[in-house]
Length: 124
Length: 165
Image (cartoon, rainbow over all chains, first blue to last red; front, side, top):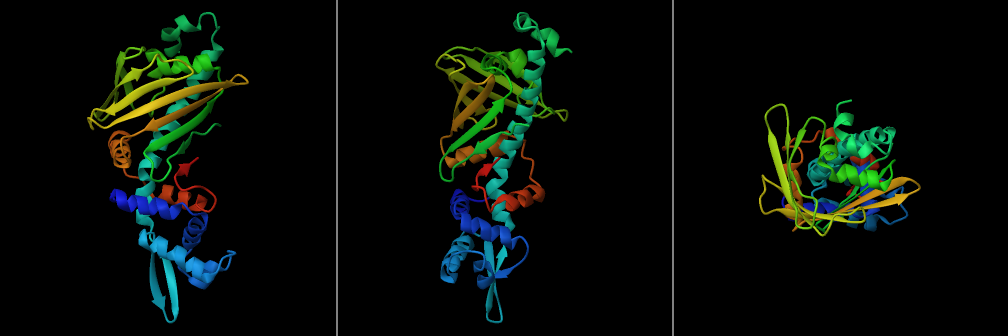
């Protein structure tokens, strides 16, 4: 688990749609600044600034191949940043799915008797 | 099928949750407040929920446990603040395994065309407390697989980072 400062850096880095798009593209493999800049309406220096933020958050690492700097996705910080949220979501997703079923069952009962027949309805 | 939308803004110790149910508000409120009904849905199905106390009133105490087949028991307790109503139900929430880490949960239910929109706003004492409580109390420390990360990355281009919908 990371420190809270690291998690803040990760969430801060993820708060920008361009940076999220950069990360999504890096899931297919390492890319150069020029390759990363191509689909965006922003300059290469702007992309470089985004890459610096991502690098400081530990979300990417950068290496040099000949004259080209390649960006590489580092998945682990992202995994830590979202893990607790995924757990929370899974808990409530399953709970609410069960609540859907319960509400449907309760509505099939005659309304005038529903409040007094919970015990019976549970055993069905 | 309805999905539970959960939002955790970066840098703030809140969690917001929205979920729509195909039932009138009074029934959704009953399912949240009658122990006999609540124990049938709250928590994953692998847990047996036992409600030990449930005093639905201002200052009333609630206490329940989740137990799995492997003998793990997770206890939770809290206090209702204000008279619980479908319009607003406010309570503290504390995991027995992390005493003193208390969140304040406010649930509001809004009926619209016979359906009910439930909104829960949870306030934690700090970001650290929020993460720690969920790490400790939600799933007994089960680690996530990388599949979820893959799914998240696939959505990163068009979603806010901390919203998993």
